[in-house]
Image (cartoon, rainbow, N blue to C red; front, side, top):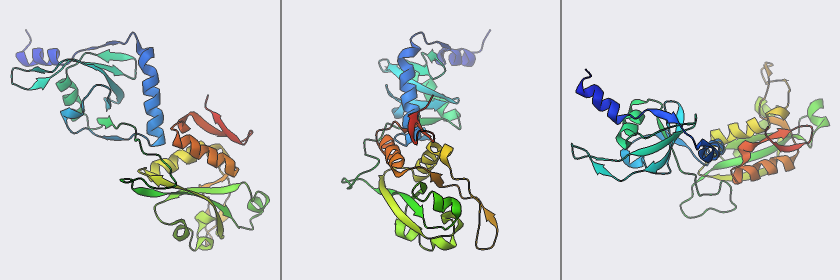
Length: 267
């Protein structure tokens, strides 16, 4: 005989079954992943039951979970509200768990997270809208180094970075810093950011252009060998193209093709 506690747990936590219409939901998970990669969505700690609503995404047990349906609210024996959910998981399974069961699972999971809705604020803008907070700037630099590799490819060698200070301050004393190839630089382009995680965005841009990273070793001012990681052999129009893809949230679909000197769709 099972104890009443075991019976209650079994009733509260519905088992997972194969989601027969998963193809309907698969594009939603793919889009969420793209929006996470582009910074349009973020993951944040789960805090309260009210965050569980139809159409919301969560991460629980290492899997993305989508609340596809929510039944009518009912009162438990203890006078608490609850509802039956249809939760779809990104591994192709589903569960008709109770809302409070999902709440407990998220609270118990140290890595449990809610996924925010996509931001409606443009990533880049020529002006701020009331309520927007400037988060930083993407900058594109051209080096004035006399290194033969750099000199021979002057129009293609660009440093792409993100800063929360003015670009002028960021490049001050460039000729003394190995990250700037121990040489002065020229500002080629800048793009203002709003409500964006700068670190995530910079990592995303560098992943897109990873195949064109400039392989160069220089000596810092102490004579130690250094390999800068933010310089790429890419034309400026390809960087502009990447910015446009970030704006429309499709950048995760693309990677830079050195042979074609342009962005191309992955896979």
